[in-house]
Length: 361
Image 1 (tube, rainbow, N blue to C red):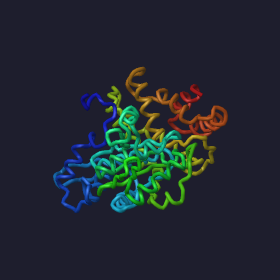
Image 2 (image 1 turned 90 degrees about the vertical axis):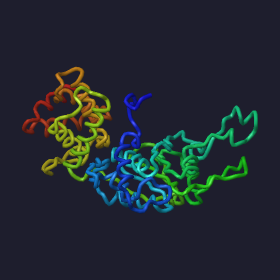
Image 3 (image 1 turned 180 degrees about the horizontal axis):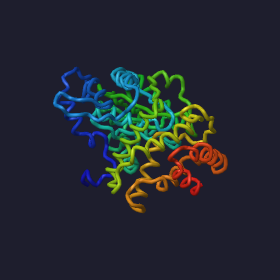
Image 4 (image 1 turned 120 degrees about the horizontal axis):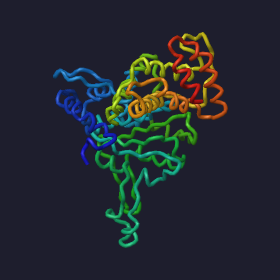
């Protein structure tokens, strides 16, 4: 399958030209097993200009110091835990760090309530196991084992969704950098370059607290929500434009005024007050994250492209916006209607959005 037919390319494929240019111009010390130096990894994630004149696009817009701390952590023997509320780009940052450091972001374990030890250690091809007994040929290596064997970054998404007893499987891996295989009377020792990036949020349901022993193996970096309206507008605008191109939507970009209007709504409801602080508001039960704002705008572009005139309008956003706000059909509906009447209706130039959203509730 050609890259053009793939819905979402891995970071190391989509940004291969940037990674190659960084590698070619990177004359700074590289830790053993790293594709780029820490300086080049920082430039890849935060963006910048190369001596060749090539511009590296920013993958994360926010506090640069947090990214530096995250990269520095991965140089040491401590694992990295990216913590934050939903939609703060934890998975996005994790993927791009792995792509820049290892050239491979696919050593991924998705944490769920059903994730067992085999996902973190290894499994077996049971047909061969029954026919031949335990052997290396019958073993099925997990992404964690492959990362240890090849000296790459392993990623664990939603660590706190995994049961506490399974989480603790990581303790030996992170402290000893060794994965015992008692069935074969051997062990897998991690090669230089191996480390783990985990992500977790503390506002989701089904959270399992990390044991103190496991917490000590991680350096925690908390990724905050965007600090300012302008910063969040920039993030949403960039991601919506990229998604529109990837999905080949006829209308691939949103007017910046619509982006700002949606971001303003999300921030005000999230913070429980209007931007000027003049009016206190009730907050809905959902997180109203930056990621959800991106989703609402992408949905609006699809509606405008295929059922409208190609110009994104309030009516194209209304249904997805209402669905993003109203997670609890009773309590959130009251919050949303109150916001529409007291804020949206009274704002100059927002009457179209008020009418569209009121009709969709």
